[in-house]
Structure formats: structure tokens, C-alpha cells
Amino acid sequence: MGGLVARHYLINQSNTKNIEKIFILGTPHIGAPKSYASIRYGREDPIPWWIPTRPTPSELMVAIGNMLGLYMLLPTKKYETISKDGFLIYNDNRLNLDQTYYENRGVNVKMIENAMKFHDDLEMAWNKNPFAETYLMIGKLGANSTIGAIIVNVSGTNVSIKYEMVEGDKTVPLISTKSIKVPSTNVFEFNVEHQELASDSNVLNRILSLIEKV
Image (cartoon, rainbow, N blue to C red; front, side, top):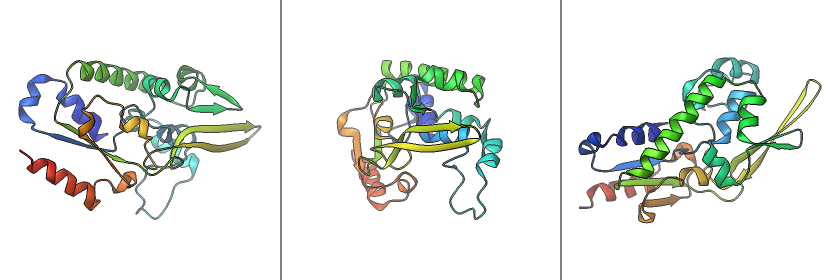
């Protein structure tokens, strides 16, 4: 969420005079299916790992069903375009984004609409005036490391959930972290998972070297 907030701040050109460089670590610029698994099915919970008592899926759905931050991390139309398909396969039918969000229910439609508008406005403004000194620090762990699509099969009261896996950092697909307009020389990839990007020594040393570079 921090990377989205930072970019939103910078699309107001009067704010750029306050910032020399921006470093974005693993931000899902066009969303991550993992957030939908949490909101809609109570899976892949976003609660910090160090909290010992884990909620059940039902408890998690109640707790985060209207959590605005998670809605802002849902896949966008651009995610659907780049991945060349929808991210939800429901009873063997791959749904597009409109079907997923507005017909499959179980989500707050108003929050979906607000989140999609936020992304559309941000994308348009950023493409028009991207902040040149933007650096992407990206986790890249291999072809089958990250949830790229959710496979749901429902039979009566039984719900089976599996995943299609893609390249990424175990949380955010690579296509999402690399999707914004920045110079290719400002993109750095590391063999690091999402939650460790902000503490990994190689990532931090790279950021430090770029801060010191004149």
C-alpha cells in the first residue's frame, strides 16, 4: 500500500519539489490475487506471522471483509489485460473482472468501485507525468512462487480452493510489481520474498548506493 500512496502523492506535481528519489519495494501496482483470496474466502490471511493465534477462514472474512487497504490491492483491469485473462476460475469457468467483482458476490461492491477508480486515476496521471527518480525493488523467486489465479470449485457446502502459480515474490506477481512506467535502469530484481524486501541487506545496500549517487 505504501508504494501506491507514495505514487498518489507524487502525481500532484507541486509535491515533487519535496522529493528527490522514491524507492518502491514490492508494491502490487495493478493488484495481487492473493488479496481477493483473503477478502472473499478467508484464505492467505494478511495478519502478521508473529501473531500466534490464527483466525479461521470464516473469522477472517468477517474481520477483513470491509478493509479498505486490501480492496486497494485487488487486481485491476490492467492486471487482467497484462495476464491476458481473469484471475478467478470458478467451477471450471474463468471469470473476467466484472464477473468476479460484481456477479460472484461476497465482496463490498462500493469499495471495489472506489479502488478501481483510484487505480484508473493513478495510472492515467502517472503515465502522463511519471516521477523520473522512481526505483523499483522487486522480489523474483521463480516461475511458480506466487498466486496468479484462484481456482474455486463449489459442490453443495464443500468449497475447494487451489491456485495457479506465476512468477513473483510469494505475494505479488512479477507482472504487477513491474507494471508502472519507469526507466528500465531503475528496476532491480532480488531473490527475496515480499515480506523480507524491506530488511534484506542486498536490497538496503542497493537503495543506499542509489541515495548516495549524485
